[in-house]
Image: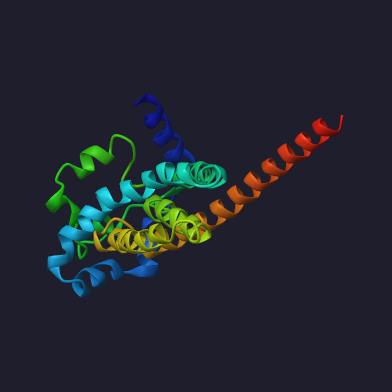
Length: 217
C-alpha cells in the first residue's frame, strides 16, 4: 500500500498528463466500437476480460512444463518480466485515463457485470495507468510464443488466437483502453518475446559452451 502511494506520487511529480492528447487523437472511437457490437456480447467480453485473460496468462506456465525442454517456459517468464518492467516505467511517465473516464460518450460496461471491478483493480493498479494495455501486451506475448511453439502445441495456438483477439477487443469495447494503448501493448509484446528469446538463447549457448569446455578438460 505504501509502495503504491509512493509510486503514484512519483508519477505525479515526473509524469506527463496524456489523457487529453489521446482523446484529441482518437475522439470517441471506443464509443463507436460499443455501438457496433451488439449488447448481447457484453457479458462475453466482460468475462473474457476478467477470466479469459487469467487463463491465457497462467496456462502457458503449466503447458510448457510438458514441452520437450523448458526453453519455452523460460521465454514466457522472461517476456512477462520484461513486459512488467517496461510497463512500470511507462505507467510512471505517462498519466492517462481510459475512454470510460475521459469521455461521457463511452460507457463503463464492465461495472455493470462486475461492480467491484474498480475496487479490486484499485488495490494493485490505478485507472490512470492505461498506457500501454498490459492485458494486450501479455495476451499477445502468449500468442506470439504460441505461434513459435505451434508444431508442439497446435491446439493451444487455436485457443490462444481466439482468446487473445477477444481480450484485445474487450479492452476497447469495455471502455478501459484507447487504441493507442493497444498498439503500444502489441509492440511491447513483440519486443518482449524477441528480447526474451535472445536472452534465453544466449544463456543456453553459454551453458553448452561450459559443458563442452568441462568435458574436454
